[in-house]
Length: 160
Length: 266
Image 1 (cartoon, rainbow over the protein chains, first blue to last red):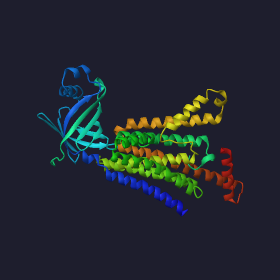
Image 2: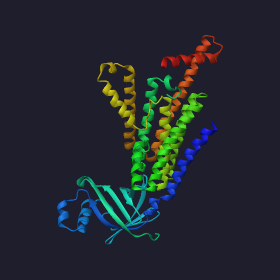
Image 3: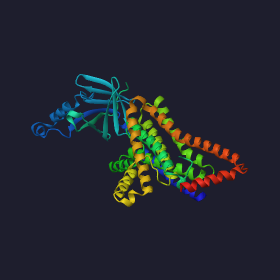
Image 4: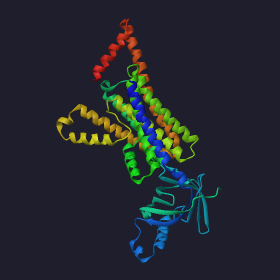
């Protein structure tokens, strides 16, 4: 009887050890996202192909941003500053807005709350030291999935 | 619902247990999706996510999803451990204890969420872990006491079995088989109840938020109290009959009644 319990404890102990090992190897996405991120591109899976031929990449990105982002709080932002206390400053050309951010799920959902508790959710597809990719479902008149890519321009943000 | 074990359970016992627990599982699963953006009982999905996170090499997500799957497994382990070790001493207690633990977990999630939740990732993951443990407890209990007939936290197996049963019903010999008809009734009631719980959770989420876990706990309390009530009523009638028949050895009379009931059910 004692032997079987020892075996069980060993297996569970191994499971816990594996968990601790993985967690110690990992970077917490909540900490990794902190810092200043600059928008690189806006892409849309159903972007008009003719536009791609006619115009350069930057204007395509802006075209997509105007098309699908008009109803989003992030529309005017070019720089996103994530602070540790759940504050996010969205900065654009003559534009600044303070909103709050949280991570949900297993660290794969970015939730942005603004004004009178309006909430937007973005899928955090990629998060590394210098790259952040967000995906989100667009609204009904431009159905599809949009993708925002950022590069980290400043890993530290001043405390507000 | 709870006091009978394996073959001594009737179809009615399984349907009652299945519908009530599937309803709570549906509510909890959709509640966790709406509040935390992750399922709390969809283990097949978590295995798929674990595989995809391993491919991507996201250690943090691998650890989190691995721990969730492990806690569901551990919930089922604890549940059956309680059942098989306490069953001989007190069947009702052995079957009620996992549900009591589940209620404690869910009330904690509701209470913490309502008063202390600051929406940090760690809190989200711990609360989800508790819910997965609770769902493991529930699924382990229902499967264990019903001889693997009642599983209520996910519907993959249920839908597969229903598909098989309905294909069998194309032949008259199976269509007229009472046991198969009973099984179809049970599975349909589980699926419908789960769906109803999930829809109700979706509609009430905006108004109730974390309070929905109190409602779920209330339903689980009904499962526990129902059997306690039935036990008391049954004991009352047995004692009354024993007095009427002037039976002195009440213990053996109760045992005789239990054996009679088990033989009818089997």
